[in-house]
Amino acid sequence: MRPSEATAFDAVVVGAGIAGASFAHALAPHARVLLLERESQPGMHSTGRSAAMFMASYGPPQVRALTRASRAFYQQPPAGFADTPILSARGALYVGWQGQEAALDAMLRELRATGSVVERIDAAQCLRRVPVLRAEGLVGGVLEADAMDIDVHALHQGFLRGFRRAGGTLWCDAELRSAEGGGRGWTVTLVDGRRVA
Image (cartoon, rainbow, N blue to C red; front, top):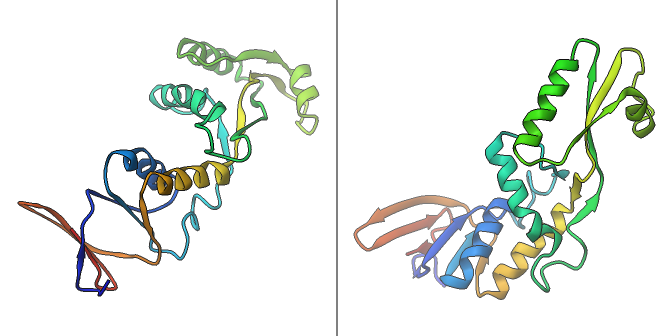
């Protein structure tokens, strides 16, 4: 294709990191989708450096609800999505020190009220789980035993693989210059002159 020619797609997703790849993956079975990545390969920035935890207790209530809703997908992704499990056991512990007892109890109540499976443990239990903690002043913690590590690479590659399998098109080294809306849709122009209508 010459740079001045326009290529037709139903949707263009800008950025092939985990967010863009997951959106393109969901959209590709229903439309002609182009996924643009300005780097030479997807996932070079924040996605490529992510160390991710699956924690139903993390974030505001809306984020916790989204996390709980995604658990089934992560635990049993579609056939062929990933060669390895996406989640692996880890556990997470919020600790508190003298003077923070009320805060720990409040956290426990709030997390339980929004569906997180957590328990209050004492200082001795915290130290058994994390021996490097400073014992002096430690009063206990809130344990989320079923928090897990997310294999970000497997997840990202699964989205990209499924996107391509559904007919999606990925362009790397494709930096967006402009996107202009008109009566018949949008025209996207790349820095190298390629146009997508």
